[in-house]
Image (cartoon, rainbow, N blue to C red; front, side, top):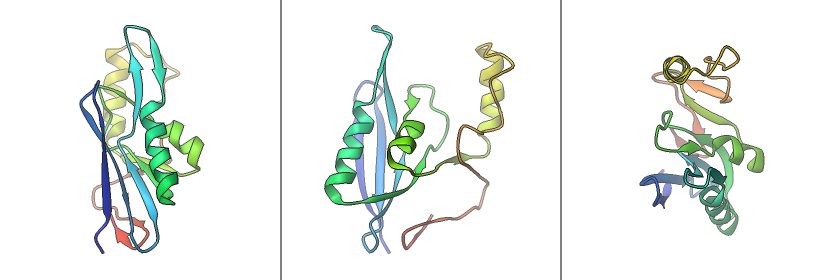
Length: 137
């Protein structure tokens, strides 16, 4: 089965966010959602995530995964925010723990910053598969 894919462009970061769903079940995954950050104002907003939620609501979709493909150095992830709003689990590749250890040292994040990937609900290993509706991922 071929998923239906919609891309959302975040102009300030040049990032693409994706929503894909199973046309049969309307089960949906969000990929690489942006949590907007405006450094000049020191402010964060959820405008990009809210645009995605509006689309999901308008299309009658059911979100079953919120996924980050990797830690993004150019923007914050809105995965946790969307998970709270939509009740869907979050996931990322298990190698995120290496990046977390690197960033912890580089940015002096302190001993209380976890580097075990526990910020996500699931860490995917190479070759792991899961379903989004009738679509194997």
